[in-house]
Image (cartoon, rainbow, N blue to C red; front, side, top):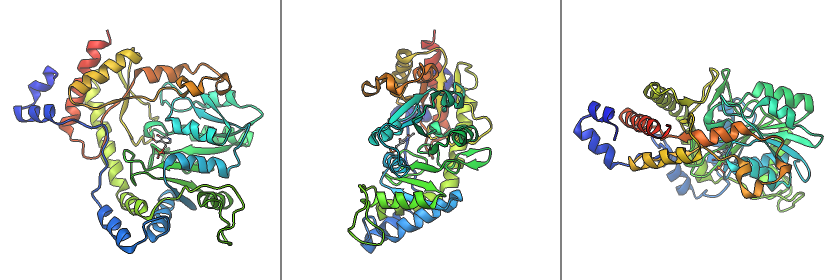
Length: 390
Ligand SMILES: Cc1ncc(COP(=O)(O)O)c(C=O)c1O
């Protein structure tokens, strides 16, 4: 345990830290979650029909000022649903960042289309608009920008490129519910936007996802495909090969309660980032994502340990673990995975994605994480960085 930390803290606190493991993420249920779930259970509406689904969809759309919300069972299939409804299929190319969670690019492959793994910006870690331009080919049909770790991608430039080349834009907002780009909510720029409500996300429904759109036709297609492709007027008649991608009324009950508290959940995350930044500011080699003045909602507070690489970074993760702190590596570039090792997926070397992945580490971030724990985590991280970055 770092000496500086020990000096500043009393024996009781020290004992607490060394005994309690600090998890990387935890959900926060401080509102109507239990009440609504119990109500859903008692009503008997436990599957994918029920008042909470309608309310959650309506309120989530309204929170974003969007026309349609289509709830799904998770965020991965929200992406697949959006791509399917957009007509993405065999032989089409879809531009995605190389540095993202695997679901972003896998969802493209579920459509038999080709994800083009594109490099990210070294400052904000999001897909680089210049690299998007270079990646466009005659068969490019869509772009999926990701707001990585909650930090908004450069949507204005991306929408301009998409407009020039008549491409669909599907925003992957899985990690960024409530993030603001120049004061405007992410998820309101693209033709469709997709969210995740997995247990570690900004708000959760256990597993869950959502698609937003202002386009009536896309919304109708997503609703039909979500429900096996069933004709909306003629029950048990199918015009398309669809899926069962529906959310349950119980998930939506949790989601509605979480949405009611979203602004305060976001405010807590803002405070956590401020504290991490303050406590790590003495170490120049620890660098945060550049936000360009936007609101990064800090799904996970994630930093670069400048000058480190995959091996040394992993040593830091082990050292933190010995100090009872859970942390995790930044996503590996998708092109590192065996089933993405094909030149068809690549246009360049994606050196920024590799550098960030090698240096990046995500730190515990959840509503209720006490300042004394952030103090402790920061002290342990600085000590490990100074020890292993030489
Ligand atoms: C960027 C990104 N896209 C998509 C997903 C998929 O969401 P889910 O886990 O709900 O399927 C995630 C989830 O972690 C994610 O981080």
